[in-house]
Length: 222
Ligand SMILES: NC(=O)c1ccc[n+]([C@@H]2O[C@H](COP(=O)([O-])OP(=O)(O)OC[C@H]3O[C@@H](n4cnc5c(N)ncnc54)[C@H](OP(=O)(O)O)[C@@H]3O)[C@@H](O)[C@H]2O)c1
Image 1 (cartoon, protein in one colour):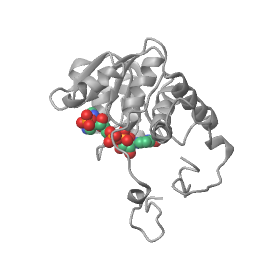
Image 2 (cartoon, protein in one colour):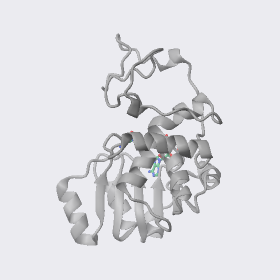
Image 3 (cartoon, protein in one colour):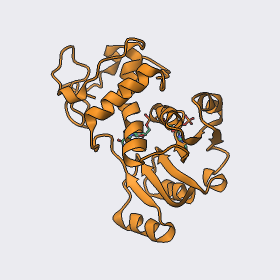
Image 4 (cartoon, helix red, strand yellow):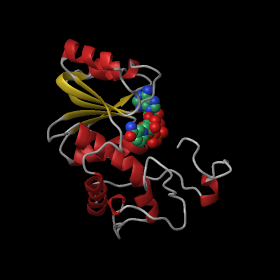
């Protein structure tokens, strides 16, 4: 995640980087496990710790719990003493419970907001064109709870309405908007080194396979 957002050239053989983007790879994990954690684990950490101010004993709902970001979010929340409800599809039930989740909900058969209405935090990584999914997350919150949206930018009006209706905080989080980037990078290093979090790798790609077909080889998004 060198110089992210921007042309960080993370796939280059040599690259210059600000010191604050770097941490020493723990010797007890592979390069693949370290690389997997850069964006995904930092997103989970910034969301739960910086934006969500997660505390021991919090009830935390994590959508996308079997995914890149979500599987770190489950482990980080659990490590920090939260009660974790992971949401993914049935085929990933054992995986999510194995990460430490206390409960599992299959989003294909069950609406989580029918079962949970007293969460302190909802970490929502599900993409929708509108605020419909974060609206469901709000239903799962207790009064005073916080919804962290990784995907959807809620409008100011939506945020105000949520505050009025149920006294909840709705925040669109971004991994780059953090009060202490170097601290985040170091925190991930330390969590990996201690074994508090582990990267689960479903697939690896050769460098050639990362080429995206544009003439410069750069991701056209940035
Ligand atoms: N705001 C930021 O700074 C930031 C940073 C990084 C990523 N993101 C965004 O976060 C999202 C997640 O990224 P990722 O890399 O973790 O994706 P991913 O690895 O593809 O994981 C997606 C997860 O979503 C689950 N899912 C799909 N539909 C769902 C639903 N209706 N309810 C609950 N869970 C559902 C999937 O579960 P199953 O596979 O079990 O069905 C899977 O666990 C991406 O869209 C990414 O763009 C945002």
